[in-house]
Image (cartoon, rainbow, N blue to C red; front, top):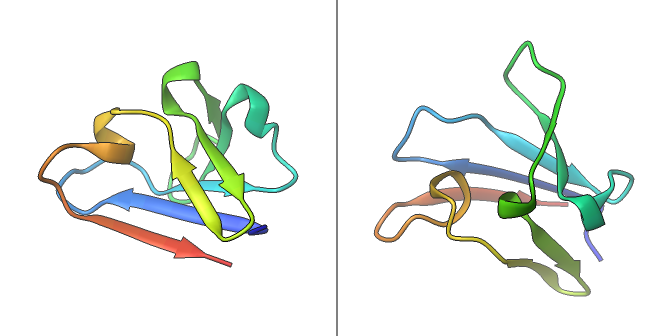
Length: 75
């Protein structure tokens, strides 16, 4: 299971979002990588960490917009 997932919609000005194995993934919490805000959460922004990566569970534009390119880093 990944320890860190970093995501960014390359087509928007939205934030870089970090999910770690220590954040409350069941409540969909994430950390901002490039903002003065430190943390966010929302039930429409969830994804699951799985043994070989992650599974997106949303159609939110910052995570999974149709036709957009995304940057993902998994560690």
